[in-house]
Image (cartoon, rainbow, N blue to C red; front, side):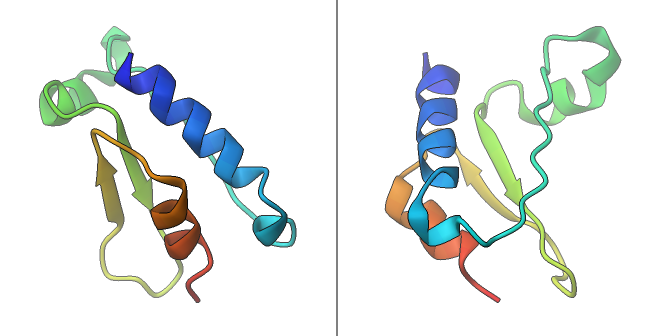
Length: 79
């Protein structure tokens, strides 16, 4: 249920008028897929997880467990 809620919040946020000119590259990884065993080993108890990567950023910003539209918007609009 957490993943479904997080996905709904994420897609709602991405549809926001504020982000209409912001390019995003979204990749969804199913950690239950045997091909994604590394992600399973890393996040099996921490899903959902969202990594936000930007050019020049040393490491991704991570959102875990619960997503909030205002926090996502804040992160997605940073330069």
